[in-house]
Length: 422
Image (cartoon, rainbow, N blue to C red; front, side, top):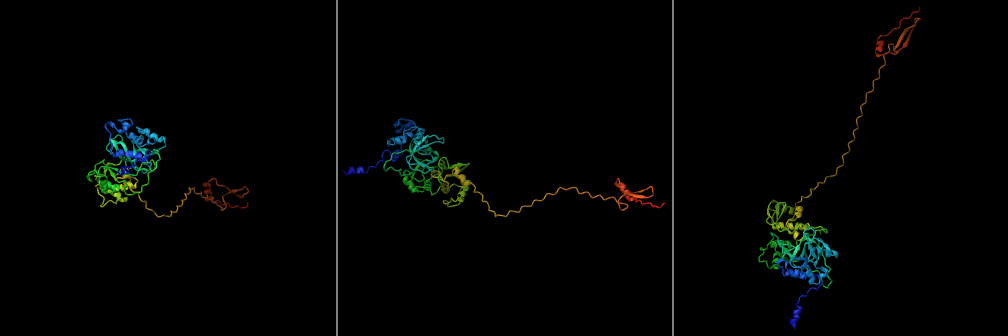
């Protein structure tokens, strides 16, 4: 009897059917089992639908809903665009940059606005932040097909891949709360080591080793390998302003895979050159130098990556977008020349206005000189003398006919003849 009671008390309580937690638990189960398909897309989910030997990402979502009593809320689909219309028709569609909630059905696209892959959101995510998912018919890393892979995997997806979210109206069940955040997944990029990942996640190498028992040596990790990191691990604190709705805030379309080439120059692990020195100096000038123990140099270092990650977070990038590998957007901001400072000038009184010079008057013809009156030989004007018949003399004033006559008259003074009495 005691053994029977003990067996009942040790049974793990299953989430109630019709709940969000039940939906999430079913999806996690397949990822934890590392489920993989058979040849030519032969799967449990395809046989159940039934539409076997076909791409099965949406059939996986539908299967998890059916098995947990959530078929009415989630729907049953094998074609992603039809599933999108299902949520839009119910008013349960949310944009790619909206806040994500655990249990949301997340749809992906290739930039053309058409859903081509689907998964289930595992934990809440703030607007613009990368989203943790569980997906069927995908690959474990960036190397394989993302929408026609070989199994069920945990993934972390950037917002640039996301078309939008369908939010099922799960039945209200007592005790059903948002699924607690479990450990996060980290995809190793080229050139990254456990110490780099630990610094970027705000944790320690020992903590990563304890969560990943399959790692037999801290230096033996490979590009594309997925690691478990603590759920509480967070990058260095920053206060980026949240991106505006429907406005992607991305440093690159995809998380960088290690060394990158921008404008013909390489950045990231292994990169060397004077442009690396210029980048380091720019980080110092902008106040991002706390990881440096020596001056900037031409070889990319861990300190460069950690300081660059701080700079990316100051711009509002988060998660894989703030991993310390430069992208075109952040590099442009870093290397942009500072605006020139305008030297203030003391105010000066305006110079007095120069008086207008008067325009010179138009010259006029000089007045004619008054013509002198002809000289009068007798002092009384010009006269002529006329001898009368009786012997008398009569003087009469005359007007000379010309200047010549007047001059002649002036030169010849006529003296009156003596008049004697007869």
